[in-house]
Image (cartoon, rainbow, N blue to C red; front, side, top):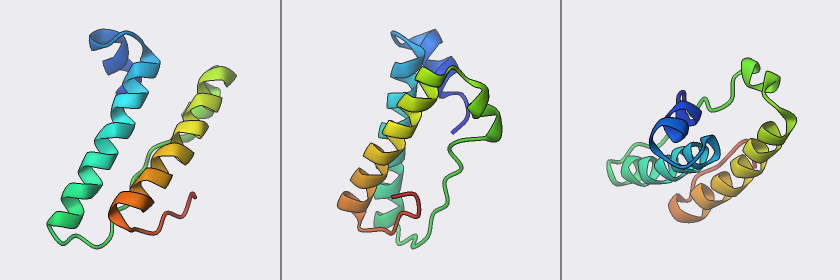
Length: 83
């Protein structure tokens, strides 16, 4: 999930809007995977370099992980290790 912040700054109202768009895309993608019969999916969504971002942004990303992981579990019935 590289580039959500850059995309948000360039095409949406803010970096945070880019993070939100990336979360929504994961929901769409996991639904597609289920429809296609893909039973396992690994998402690498937070690199060690991301810890160097401002605390406010890291906190927001952690909240978003919880939110979107919960939505993925609800909509596609998958196990989420992070949740």
